[in-house]
Amino acid sequence: MGSSSPQAKTAERHGVSPPGSLAALLAEFRGCFSAWTFPVFCALACGLVSQAASRTVCGMLVGAGLSQTWSHHRAHRFFSHARWQVEQVSAVAARLVVRLLVATDAAVLVAIDDTLFHRRGPKVHAASWFHDGSAIGKAKVGYGNNWVILAIVVRLGFLNRPLALPVGFALVKKNSDNSSRLVLARRLVEALGAALPGRCIHVVADSAYAGKALRGLSGSVTWTTRLRSNASLYDLAPPRTGRRGRPRLKGNKLSSLAALATTMTFAPATVTRYGSTTTVSTAVLRCLWYGVFGPQQVQVVFVRDRSKNGYDIALVTTDLGATAAQVIERYAARWSIEVAIEDAKQLGGVGQARNRLERAVERTVPFGLVVNTLAICWYATAGHHPGDVEAARALAPWYRQKVQPSVLDMFAKLRHVIIAAQFRPVDPAPLTSQEISIVRLAWEGVAV
Image (cartoon, rainbow, N blue to C red; front, top):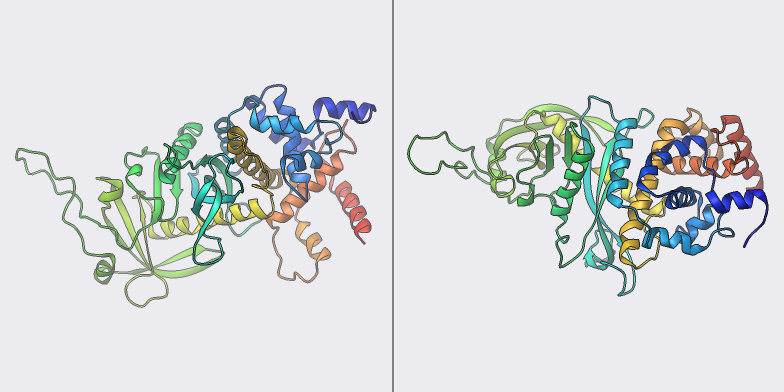
């Protein structure tokens, strides 16, 4: 099947020839796969990035340029039958991101959220009706696979906003041990801690990720979330009295959050969030959120942004050493995972595969998210050039306020480099800027 030329035979045996800079990142995952599956992993990863249309499994094969030399069964069996573990791939991806994009002495900031990938059909593994915040109408529900996603939040020198890079994944399965999103989130954090021994991990999530499952977290892990308005707070446990019997685990119950805010003393704090630096009023209270963290002491930060009285938002964290400004900035960085999920769906094509078997469903979405993470890592370490923004503005001069590359620009540049590298498979060295410009100009001429 296919051509009998030497290049076709090479593609049939080994797949595509990624550029050297990307091949170095893909090589980090060689230990996760067998000699048979690793070339498939590389080919489908390049195909997912190169494909600008349908990102189904067959679409990845077409994007890799192997639809005439490989059977589509080889690509489908990679997800449904091949021997590899998502957990191992996630651990390698996490270590790679931290090594490349996080300072050695810095804590690892992690954002957690869940999202729904829409599916159809009663035979799709773990598909059911879940909450869908993006649904149109009053009934915010949708049918599909619900995933809990853990992403490492990084800051790149050429961007003024944080980026969330997904590295941990857990599929929600109703009526099973994997039905609780909070329990799955804790498992992902514990797996990340095992992959990054000795690193301090700061977890940030929305108010849905707070419950008794968070009790007894490792000392190297802190948890920051939004405090629910009806949360029951308590004073710290009083000192031991010396009398017989079990000592008290908590103090007296405190007033409601609204009442507490009227008694707190607010002080100004300068915070950088959502791309701008502002001054807000903050007040800090140390207490117990016994219903969630048990006897572990927490820090509650009241934030007064627009209101003159009371508070606008209350945050709670187990990080007692963080300042109020640090807690606010940390929670604001949580929004980056919302953007990352949207980019993965709209730009990266994650979730477009239409497989139904258990292993295939549990692997395809994590595979796509890991490839998206690798694409951003590639751009941050090898693909970025100061002239990228100027080149984009030259093609679209109406974007006068564009001053930094977008995720779409990152994906597009890697796509260009992968396609250009196929014309010299015997020399996988990184393409020069001049070569990339020549190919880009040629494509522009064809488009015109």
